[in-house]
Structure formats: structure tokens, C-alpha cells
Length: 339
Ligand SMILES: Cc1cc2nc3c(=O)[nH]c(=O)nc-3n(C[C@H](O)[C@H](O)[C@H](O)COP(=O)(O)OP(=O)(O)OC[C@H]3O[C@@H](n4cnc5c(N)ncnc54)[C@H](O)[C@@H]3O)c2cc1C
Image (cartoon, rainbow, N blue to C red; front, side):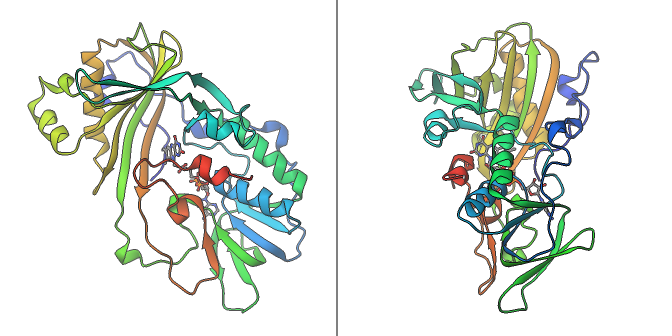
């Protein structure tokens, strides 16, 4: 499960006057690129990639730049990326992606308990997703990648020298290699589904406008593990002691902040209503008066994975291949290397 279109505002936060945020899928990021992505020319490809997330686009332009014929099959090549990404800026700068941030914080704070505050003097940023996606799309166009606007349904690997993808619109696309970059949905890679039982990073986040908040705007709050806000909620305090969650906060201005209650890993995932209740208790403790909710994020990242069945001609990459860092869930800087 990934970010979902926001349902109604959570009961505990919807005091009658707050509106549910708009459905993020309605946003248009690239109306100017409509009709400008080169379509398939009907020939065979060296590489066919399923999915146009960060992993699919980065691999596509890297392989096409090396002189190979590459096709991407995805229903949303011009669509929005629903996940919000946070990164350490040195990682992006080293790849020439320093123009793809929308907010930068000079340092990051970690609270381990009531008195222990640690400062990480490593600047952190929120990725400007439209800028990053545009940059990758433009690089794909420059390097000759071709696009099919469809979902992949199936991949036939029975021939020894090529694989054939069947698309949702019935088209077939052949390639010497196929990469599955469909994220956690793993649309093509074959694996033992009965044995796939990952833990999950779970998080519930909201971008809110508030009257005021206590977070310094030059620091992002990387992890706040304190639990004194749960003193008046014995059940939540007990469940938090068993499976702790922390607050991750990005203060954008004195009145706008992204707040996310995060469980690093749990099997099964901590349910979203529990995460919302814990966040609500924190916000009350901090005295936050919410004026509007602008975005809601339901985050569920499989942590750890399973090896693909072997032998197999389809190769997984990114979320499909379980490339997230096994304890933090971070990945985007890793898949973009050499884009
Ligand atoms: C909510 C969330 C927040 C995250 N935050 C961070 C972060 O802050 N920092 C970080 O480093 N990492 C983060 N991650 C981890 C990781 O970086 C992301 O999951 C990242 O989006 C993975 O990129 P991807 O391209 O592999 O997959 P995705 O981004 O999931 O892209 C897969 C694409 O494939 C398409 N697709 C699906 N099925 C099909 C099909 N049948 N045919 C064709 N296309 C298909 C989808 O529409 C999608 O566009 C986050 C993950 C989540 C879920």
C-alpha cells in the first residue's frame, strides 16, 4: 500500500471546520509535456522497464545514455509521484541534483528521551518532486527512451533470447531484458508469495497550517521518541511502550509544518488509526491549533524482502527489489546514483 488519496480528515482532527485535503491524484505536474514523450516505434528493445517512479526513470536514462534502446511501460509517466521524499543534501548534491529541493534545513534534531537532544549537523531537505521528475523525464527524452502509456499485465520469458510484455491495452512489447520497477507492487518479478512476510515501516503524516508551533524553522525534527504526551492515555502509552513510534516534523514556516507519526518497523504494520491517535495526542500536548490540513500521507514501506525465484529473466529494481535501507526505509538517493 502506498500513499492513498486522502479520505476525510481523521476524526480526531476534524473538529467540524476542517476540510479534507484535495485528492493529490487530481494534480497536474507536466501539462506542457502532454504528447511530447516519444511513443514506441514498434521495434524490439534492449531493455523494457515497467514503471515510471524514480527507479524506473533513473535506470531508463542511464541505460539509454549508454547507447541501448529502452522503452518504459507505465500508466502514469506524466503523473504525480505520490510519496514525499526527504534526503541528506550532500547525497543529492554529489549527483548534481541540488536544484531539486523545495526546503532545506541546516541541521536535524533527535530527541531520545526528555533530556537528551542530539543535533545532527548534516543538512536535510525535502525533495521537490515535480522538479526531480521533470529532470529525469527530460533526460529520458534526450537519451531516446520511448514510452507506452499502459500498465504491464504479464511478462512471457519462454523464449531464450527475449521477453515479451503484455500491456493492459493489449499491446506487446519485446525486449532482450525486462526490469520490474513497479515499486512495492512487484508486478512482474516472480517470487514465493506464500513466504513473503515483510515487516513494514508505517507512518501517518499531515501538512498543516497552525496558529503557531514550537519547532525552530531552521531545524528539521528527525526523530522525537519522547512519550510524555501519552501520560493521559494509558492504553496508547502501553502500546507505544511495546511498539514505539516517533515524530518526524518538517517546519516550513512559522505556521506551516509537516508532522508524521512513524513506526520504523513492525510486523504486522501498526494500524493507521493507532498512528493517528498517537499523533493527535502529541498535537494536543504541543498545543497545536490546526487551521487547515493541506496534505495527508499514509506510508507503508515493506522492510526487507524476499529473493526472486531463480532462474528468472525479469530483474527487479528499487522498491520491487527491496532496495530500501533495512532499518530506515530510505532509498531514493541510492537508486538515482548515475542517473
Ligand atoms: C510514503 C513513502 C515515503 C517514502 N519516503 C522516503 C524518503 O523520504 N526518502 C527515501 O529515500 N525513501 C523514501 N521512501 C522509500 C522509496 O524511496 C520509495 O518507495 C520510492 O518511491 C521507490 O521508488 P520506485 O521507483 O522503486 O517505486 P515507486 O515510486 O513506487 O514507483 C513505481 C511506479 O510503478 C507504477 N506501476 C505500478 N504497477 C504498475 C504496472 N502494473 N505497470 C506499470 N507501472 C506500474 C506505479 O504507478 C509507480 O509510478 C518512501 C516510500 C513511501 C511508500
